Length: 414
Image (cartoon, rainbow, N blue to C red; front, side, top):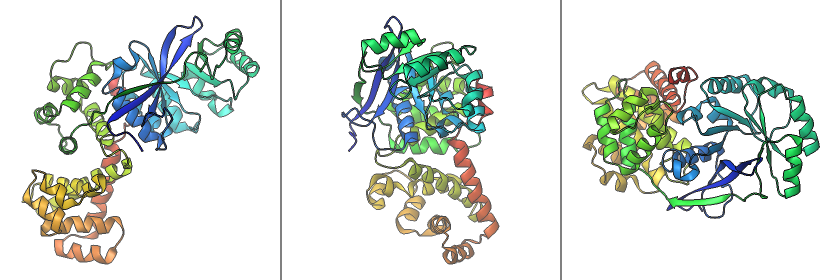
């Protein structure tokens, strides 16, 4: 079971030929056992980034490099570009497929100034196009012999690439690896991964919901974002740590509004989305939270067609809060009673009555293809199939856009 009171990060030092520490590989942990937990790699990466780069960055690595493993989807979504390029090494996991989609993302991150490393590298012709954008190749010397590695290093001499030997366990292996041409080293000979434990810092879920509602708007209200951030010390700390470590910033940030303006709308939306995804209960899949956001947007769009006298923000909250019971393992009626939200939303969530309640029932039926129920509710709310399909598709796209960094956005970050 994960330890909910603390956050854990393991770090293993990476050394140069003189055995001076030049960086650390950061490894996500969910408890004191110092082993990788049985969770989705994408969620593990998001948790590590949120709990490290957004909270305890400098106390974890100081002025050294941070080597972080990124699964395929995080790479093609350009998630690493949310973080400072000066001390982040983006490790492409050996499980990633060398697709054109991945190559395009790697090229963009390289041109933006990020350092790219290929982890546990085994030579394949499909990886050849990636070498022009690669700064470091990591080789597990337990899986790929030092003799074979030497030939590979010689063959790739025309490229400006450093080689890092992983799983170095003896002094003899260290000396041999140096002779073969390696310049960086990692393994138990130097140090086992050191576990760093810190008090878990999580923002208020209600504040996160309100922030997500704000970033759903076409134009951001920086005054309202500042107000929300100001009432949550965890979010305040993560925001200022994140912004002050950003390569975009040339001077110290002293106010939350200034931080948002410096970041720009794209990065503000991504920052809040990342924090939101990693703020749910630890044993809940991030897909459940994604569905909350998608359902919230679906309801927000439907309200405009059902009754324009109802604020579409109430539709958003109805959809978002409809999954609270699943997220918190508590009856929805108990959770709703504790929240200062509009009575129309409370009635819709608890009793399913009123226009918002019928709309929520319609959304739930549509998600599971209960077409007879959908038809009856459409008649009651005076909606048609075309409106439903259009808004459902729009909500899916909006959610994907919100939680994804589009490739063309990076050009605006350079």
